[in-house]
Length: 105
Image (cartoon, rainbow, N blue to C red; front, side, top):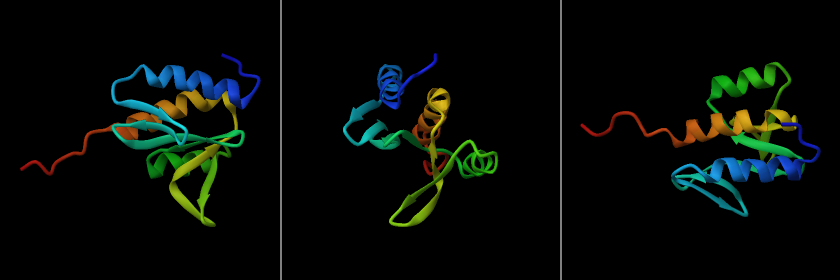
């Protein structure tokens, strides 16, 4: 789907993601099982993805580091291309929403 504005793309993400179990939408962003996985900052989508994926996206110029208090995060990236928002939001949802491995024994 071609989006004309970041607002349109964000509203579509809200509709798509809010249908999944465990997803909540707040003014702060999209959460899965209480953990933030995506939010909108100005006209960019900010998502948490695995470090290797974040590095790849940054190397290819698809995404940029998200900075918190002037420091770059290795897992959080900013994406301007509205057409990539659904794919990267889904990746972030799956990454953050994965059940932890181990620790039960």
